[in-house]
Image 1 (cartoon, rainbow, N blue to C red):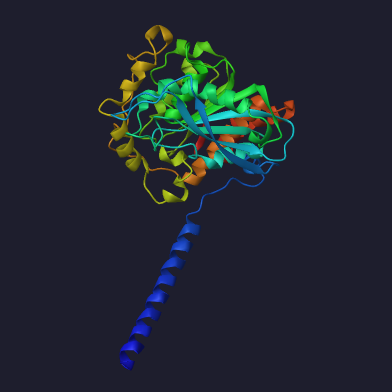
Image 2: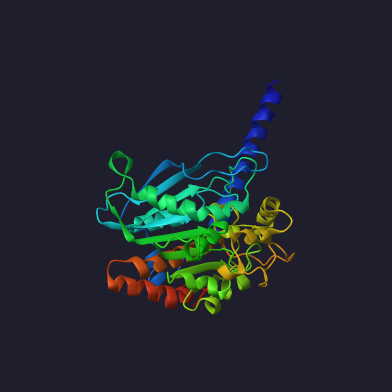
Length: 385
């Protein structure tokens, strides 16, 4: 009996030591594979630092009773559209803030990019993002990309809802500058951004700047982009298996001269989401997972959703060269997701500041960083317009 207990303790001790060793090896591997930040004396490094304001966060349930939620795969429709919303804000700022409405991707949620929302808020921005009724990952019956046509009106409703906050419902002291309203969006949310900014019927004329991250734009002809002069930036990755870089972003300056494009060499689609770091750090390309999930939600012809967005006279041209989603079996090796986040943060913040910053010197500094220094400080980044 004594011998058995003695051996058991010895085995437990050996196993405990082995587990500690494994954890130390994993920790060392995590440190060794950490991202490369730009040099502290670089222009980009300054924009990666949090701004002067502590970030607050509050959740809301905004209900638009003027528009219904459609039936979805056997799930009955609803007489309204309920938007569960998170607002990020600069806690101690008492001046005038720009407002950014962020739109999430298919199967995603309003909390998909906290690294970007929090950075913007720390620099004085108020950010609102909602779970859309039929395209989020929590959608009853499964996410339905066809409902993207209704999301520009959701964006307009969110703008109105945030502007209407007052009293105890308004947690931030800042006022919203209605001349500085912008939109950002990722994936299907990037498409929502293009619709809200440029669509001849669906756009909101209050949009003064837009950032589309891995957003599809291939069906939009040059005439589509003539509907607004709002400064716009596209951020995209060369290793994105879902939204091909060349026909969705790289050629945008040809269709809309002056529209900026930040391309990330090795940037994957899922690499943009906050959970990618550290979850996908060691994957060859996380889009191998994303393709399976998104194709299951989009159906046999993923490009079919564009048909419901408008007509040829409106600039929606289904005869353009539309790339397949996940049509290539070869997945390019993805860059480090944290480095992809760094580039996205610097690009989005400097772009919005180049348009919205109060001081002319800061606007010029931001524009110079975006157009000149970003591609120097990050070897994976390039800029074109």
